[in-house]
Structure formats: structure tokens, C-alpha cells
Image (cartoon, rainbow, N blue to C red; front, side, top):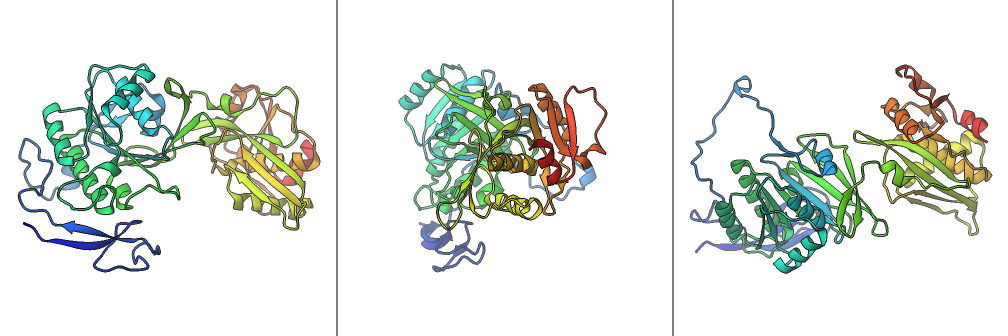
Length: 456
């Protein structure tokens, strides 16, 4: 019988302490320590996953002597997932997918598992019964002869079934529900999540089998569990979206096999998640009459250009302190742009309430939408609509200059494809632009005053 003792773990970063601390010395967070019963593993149960062949101990190898082979990827029928993973599922990789409850994580990966007809998929559920998953699969209208289901939360039992089945892909729903018998603490605790993730990581690397871990998030929006969980996995995907919209965004936060700036867009329907191939069409509202306070921005997320609609409303402030309310945009960035308009343009926004919204429930961090935000604010301030055939791509500096943005050719091409007649860009972007036979008029501007004179 091994000795049982308790330790205190930080729920934020996983730091272990022998006593309770008010402030974590590792992540500097307050009141994050919880007590957990800890048991050291014995020699008999030290390794929950053991491959069939005995691997020799790794020794020191010179870098030049290591042979590099092209990584094998499983190309899924889901083009959006292929994009965010960098071209498909890499063999032996472990991917963490996190999102709010009810956002559609389980639906998406059940659908992906059923669509993979050629490979053997094991779906491990610790949250739903077999009947619930079967009902959801019938609603999705997908079927596969090589899709297997296991409702189990003990990792030792899961690995025994994996050895019998030998799947090509494992989906765990969710990592917070698993527990290992080597640690005597409740499922979802810091030590349980860390140990279960370590066992699954060991299995993925030794068997060269890709593993998807579906995870929860906290009320602050961070991934639940210790921070070391994100360090252990190869890829971290964030599944986000507004419940009041039908569109969901799969965003890459970390990827060892591809770009970390990729983004996939899905539409939630009664028959599952559908990838949106042309997001610009759904993010632009098609109106017959022109309204003030609306401007179109040409933005890029990862390798994908698309156009979004920026909506602004400027009204006289009824109360003493003017309101600044944003949705999908950085509030501090809005305050910066308002200061530029007051200082460089002479517009009195100090007595106005300002409301800004990015249509479609998107959260955009691209600085190239500064120019469209500025034009939407000016349009609402003067109550003069911006022509719906004009779009914008430019960053606004503190001195009122329009700064250049990257990959301007792709932004112009996307605007031309959607029928826009004119695009306003920075004058400094013209230097590196290639001469193309585009039919859209490119208007270079250098300062905020030039934009105001041109439009209003």
C-alpha cells in the first residue's frame, strides 16, 4: 500500500505546494490553491500505456544524423478543420479543442468522426450515454462502419479497449471527465487532468495515433485545468461564437505543424456543422437603401481574406459621462481612434455616446480595419452614408496618418470578387504592389483629413 498524502495545487498553472498559499509564486494569481489527495504510483502500475514492442532507451543523437520524413496527415472531408490544423491531422499529434458549453464541440467532432469512412475512429465519451450519442448521430444523418463508441472515464479501461481495437484516431470527450486510478483525487482536478493528459500524450507518441481532446473553459474564457495542459499538446484550437448567431469560429491558438493565425468558420444547422467557404457573403448585410454609420473593411485571418461590416452609432450623451460600448472590437483601440479624430480632425466626440459593432458576432484583431472603423464613426457623426461600393483597408496612426497593411493584393482581390468598385488603402502600400489588371479602383490616402474630404 503506497503512502497517501495531500498537496495544494494552483488551479491556474498547476504549481504544487506543501501548504496553502494566498498568492501563487508561479503565475501571481490570488486564491487559486486547492487541496488534493495525492498518491504516488507504485512500480506495478507506473505505466498505464505500454506498447507491444519494447523501445530501447533513447541516446544522444547528432542533429545531422536524424532523417526527416514528410509528416503523414489524414485529410478530412472538413476543409475548415484541415485549414486550422495546417493541412490535415498529423499522425501522432495530440490536439486540444476548447469552447463554451453548448457551442457545438461534441457535435462537430462526432460529425468529423462519422465522415472519416476509410479509417477506424474511437469516440470516448465521459459526458453522454451511448443512446444520446446514437440519437445525435441519426440527427446528423452521417454513418460509418468504422466508427466505434466507448462510454468510459477510467484511463486504464480506455487503454485496454484501445489495445483490442487499434484505432487510427481517438476522440476524447472530454478531458475533464477522465480519471486515472494512480491518483486519488476527483475527476477535473489539476492533478487528474495533468496525469490523464500525460498518459494520452504518451500513447499518441508511442503508437503514432492522433488524439483529439475536447476541453471545457472557465467563466473567464480560459481553458479549464492547469496551464501545463496547453504546453503538453501539439495544437490548441478555440471554438467560439455567439449563441444568438448561427456561425461558429474555430481559431488556432497554438500549432506545432502549421500557422497559429488560421481560422475556420462554421454554420450551425439542424443537420450539424457546415463549413462556410465564402464568409464575406454572410458577414455583409445586403441592403437596398444606404444607411449612415456603416463601412466595409477588408480583413485577413490567417491565410483567408474576407470582408466584414463595421457598424457605428454616435449620439449626444444624455448623462454626464459619455458611453463607449463595443462588440467584437478592442475598446482601447476605439478610444485611441476617437482621440485621433478629436485631435487631428477637430470632431467633438467628448460629448457623444459611441457604440461600435462588428456584424456577424466576429471578434477582429486585425489593425487593418482601423480605417473602416474611423469612416463608420465619421459617417454616423455627420449622418452621411458611405457609398456601399467602397471598402477600406488601412491602419490609423496616432498622428492621423494612414499606415500600410500586409498582403494588400489579397484584400483588393477579395473586394473585387464581391463587386466593390473602389477600395481606399494607404499611400505607402503602393510601393510593394504588383501591377495587376484589376477592375477595382484603388484610391491611396495618406491622412485622416484626406479620407474625410474624399467621402464627406
